[in-house]
Length: 195
Image 1 (tube, rainbow, N blue to C red):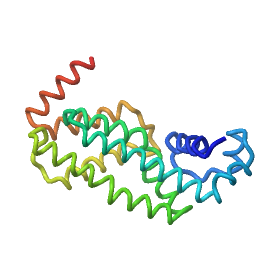
Image 2 (image 1 turned 90 degrees about the vertical axis):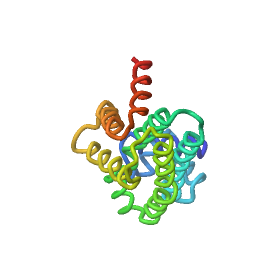
Image 3 (image 1 turned 30 degrees about the vertical axis):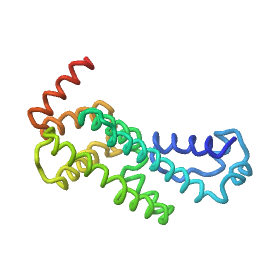
């Protein structure tokens, strides 16, 4: 069992269930390996959690950078980035982050910094690009960010079941309000090709 396989398992658990403090015994049992094997790869559990979470963030970040730099149309970029958000939503929702802060405050600080200094600037860049290309209405960028974050936060409370269709509808509603005529024309063309 390699380090990557252990991290992949933990990433999948976090993406499906959100961050929670999973005992090393449970990880070993699920992977059918010994705890010693895990501790051969990672000095301690905190290192395992840190490397796994930072790997998840770096992977998502690399994908978003690629998408933003790509020459594809704005709407395609937005949908692709939204799919990355959906994939990682439960792992990084408010409940998961509160649990991470309680269990591993140093890792939580790294996640908060990563989000502030890496993810948010990329979203700003994407929104700015959409405005410059005439696809998004010229509203304040910070307002766009608050609207996206707030809507996702409200839609994904764990006390209600998160449905992928709800998130897709949320994106459609957001885009219908934010897009210019030119942007809506492209969105309708895209939706027509999908259906």
